[in-house]
Image 1 (cartoon, helix red, strand yellow):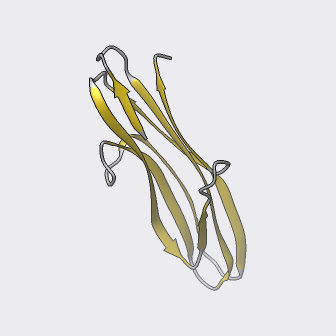
Image 2 (tube, helix red, strand yellow):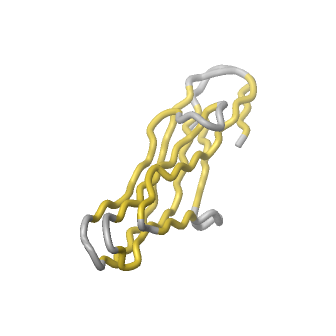
Length: 117
């Protein structure tokens, strides 16, 4: 998302929400699914501001579990002049004997920039 400010008077508030589902299907050992979402301010590979992170870790046998939720990240950009780019970032941190689904429709993810309240 590109934002533009003609005068460096106000901060930009950026929010990113992502619905993610991780689970296991009767794994015979340790189950790990962990994910992170964030905002890249003028970057496509580095987090700016507060990240959103969630996941599950289960030790045992014959486990069938589903964990789903919405992770949220936020960033407040200092007042600046010109064009800046806010990028939604997603990262799978760990996956062991599990599955993970990232929902990318408008109902599953949202990137918002707020300027002047």
